[in-house]
Length: 397
Image (cartoon, rainbow, N blue to C red; front, side, top):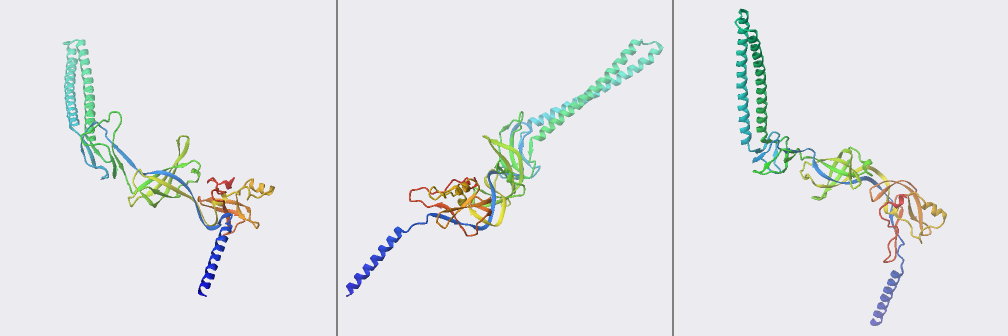
């Protein structure tokens, strides 16, 4: 009896398992994949890449040529305005100052000598003018005395001019001596140092850059390259989010500070520089970092959202509605598809608004929240899905 009951139970279980496998094998999968209309917020943005820079970067050079004898700062040094940061060998410049000072003293001596000569010529002229009255000298002697006096006066003026020249040469020599000590022009941080002690700098044709000083690294900016197709959406005051490779999981925030009008043309591609102001109080960001920027251009709240995949979907040949009416619907305008009562796609015209790349605002259209929209046709294994057009927004034709 027990064996009979066990046999019956085994037969029942075997039959139930066979029935389950048969039903599972012959059950039809849904012919379409759908996604529902949602309600929420959509933020439209402009994507760009850029480079972080200090707001003010000063390149410090040398006014004079010479050999670097001392360096007082290094990379990342904090400097104050007027602080010495390097010293050029002063020996040649000190010798030039002494030489110029000697030239000035010589010019002053020549001036005194010319004044003495002029005074003597004036005494001779006066004496001859008195003697000519008594006939002791001729008129020619008086004329010669007059000429000598005028020449002496001109020599005095020439000597005075040479004194001024010598004084100017001394000022140049002293200024060059002063230029041998290189000072920081601003408060900031030394970003780069391009010289070492013993290196000779030549300032004859072009001022060499010895140091680069970033004035304030707590305030930085991003110079982004925004495509000409998107530049019309960028406005001063907009919020910008960005990431850097050094902190891939952290999103930083900035604000559009300036939209520059000068075009940047690279291989016939036109972009514009949009400057984004960044607060760097945490000192995480460094000059030169590459940024991926998203400029938030417009936000709408509490609107119906259509999946972009639904806007891209178009029925294949078998599922495509037939007839002239369907052709007219496909002729133009954005549309999405819902399942009709007969199980075939039915077109619904819509007017899209802004898009965030995943969803698009439903500006106008006979759709309700939660309504299912067709995004893809289910094909047999090995077949490519329908309605998967590349992101080009075919629905906006």
